[in-house]
Amino acid sequence: MKRTIIVAFLVAAGVWQAAGASAGTVDFPDFSDTRDLELNGAAGVATEDDVLRLTPNAGGEVGSAFTDRKIIRTDRSFETRFKFSIHNGSVTPAEGMAFVIQPGSPDALGGSDLTALGYADIDPSLAVEFDIFENPGSGDPDGNHVGFMRDGDAQTHLAAASPDFDLEGGNRWAWIDYSAKRKRIKVYLNDEKTKPLQALVTLNKRLRSLVGDKARAGFTASTGETENAMFDVLSWKLK
Image (cartoon, rainbow, N blue to C red; front, side, top):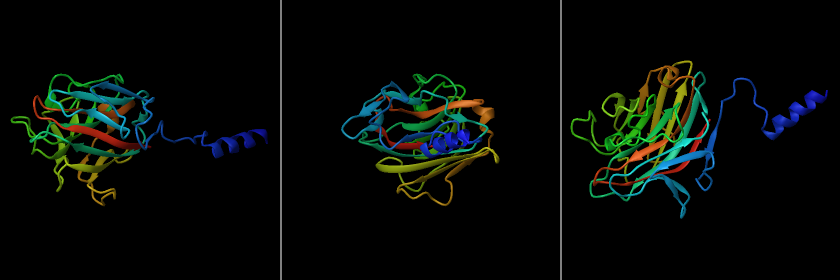
């Protein structure tokens, strides 16, 4: 009887997790408190509006932010959504940002290859890039696309597609859903907060084969050598 009362209390308090629940969750309605994140390179919080600013609008900047815990169990499904804004760029804005899943250190930060949007050489990893600049010879389909990238390689797109609106220039909403059963990752994107019925781009891969059993999640971004933009994440939820 006593154990039943304790369990009931824990459930009501939101502490008790049934078997099969997610290994972790993320809920940032804003970034006024980033104690569960490691901010690296140029990344910081724009205190005037409590957004996660991955880079300022200056040339040659690289930033990243990762969870301090490995919150993703790759044998389980998850869904994440975030609101972001790419803005205040140069005449030709560059380079882009990415949502990245990786099992390594929370202070992971891409190398000097600015075309890799801050995920260069993070290996192993899976990145969903939001690329606003077409680099010659890079394999980019165009200068406004979403693509799946693996192991810090910015040249090889596992899958890519272009939205019918600009990634840069205002608030955008992204949803990324992973089905462990179907071994499928879908990316939905919109310039309004309603989730579209159809995914923009899909990758049929077993996540565990890409990043192992457990992984961190977060964001990276980079500006060009001279071209630039601000890359902001306004809110983020993962469950």
